[in-house]
Image 1 (cartoon, rainbow, N blue to C red):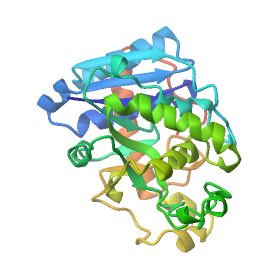
Image 2 (cartoon, helix red, strand yellow):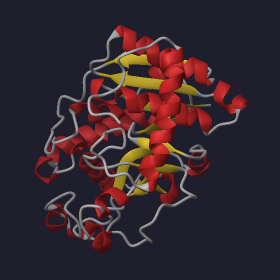
Image 3 (tube, rainbow, N blue to C red):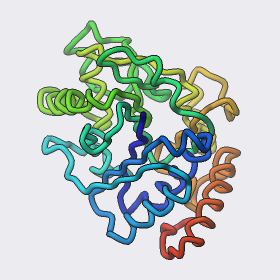
Length: 295
């Protein structure tokens, strides 16, 4: 019935492997067999694609497919200190590639703790499910979409959504792609957070968004508190690990698979999960997948 979609490049191969095993752990065996994994990439080699396929099969998924494709021609990397143009591939999933009625898009820099399929049941016709961004909660009240609230005053205060988790009817993906492409062309001066800003421009003007509960895309904030207190001025919820969160998202430049990352409780939990994943990878006979600077 549904497929999990990931965009993985050379820099995110190892966390992509961990995301696949996390998704598998979140489902009962029968649900896993009926679920699919779809991966889009710019630069993975055949051996790396085979590793992803073998791991997905070992984890119990009933279907896996990987495709190389380019991003939107209108793609713009306004901020690229730790993000590559691979981020735009989230809009390149097509019905013919997914071959399932629903797509659940998942960023690779996450720790999956629970069932991510629940929001599919809330989607109305033509809607895209997304979680409000914890660091950029509202248009005109955060750095995202600079100038948009001045150009369109009626958008000020409207919710801004994170693109790291998305739920949609697969047949609507071409419409989303067209909307994002138009936003990139017509609203280019408002793009700061790359594809996420473009997606939000389309959502704001189309109204085709279904808000999803925060626990399905909970930011890990402990790493930022290690560096300063600015998060306390932005995030309104209690700044502690959320054991009820179905997914923890490691946004920002410091990632939990890097040795330089501050070791918070969530980072330690991710490290234990990554170690289990790499043991599975080694049993598959794969070597050389650990990224530079890994723990």
